[in-house]
Length: 132
Image 1: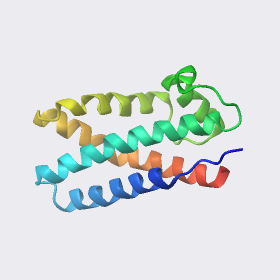
Image 2: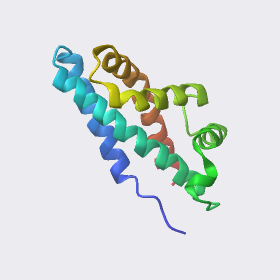
Image 3: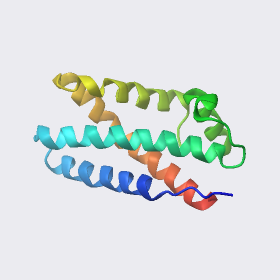
């Protein structure tokens, strides 16, 4: 059975941590804020891919067969997520807003969810490491 390589996901999470810490010190810098948003985008994408890959680990099915909502529900049932579908749907909503971050209020809205999101991906990464 093929194993799941967590290296890129780990790197994305570490990268998000690093820029978020910098943003906490320099929250006046919109370039750093924009970097937080960009790293949130790709870390969210990695997280969803890792969830789906984990679900496929024992019972391979296509990515499209699982779908976002079902993947999050199943991952919750397995205990690999800290928060539920409602919270992950909120992350997804914020991720979908990122193409509009040229608007100040939207950029701030997206950045505001990152501290909660990072707790979720830390938990997910930790659970994946334990189980794989």
